[in-house]
Length: 78
Image (cartoon, rainbow, N blue to C red):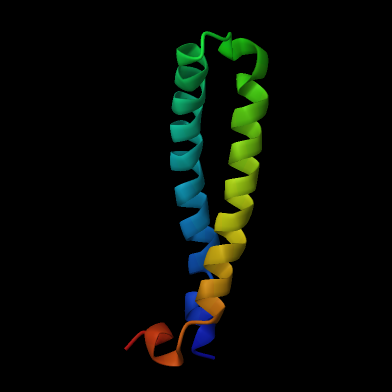
């Protein structure tokens, strides 16, 4: 029953980290393409979407796995 306290932390943490990662990749991908003298409008959307989806997937399941592997002592509320 003690694990039930920690399980909601996985989606909450992932949902807070994904927008930060999306904003970072949305800034850095076009800047990187400009430094390569390419037009960011052509490929930037696909790259940012792919980066967001892949990292969001790994954040969601990675944090969930770490939460489930947490020792019982770390999950207690007392």
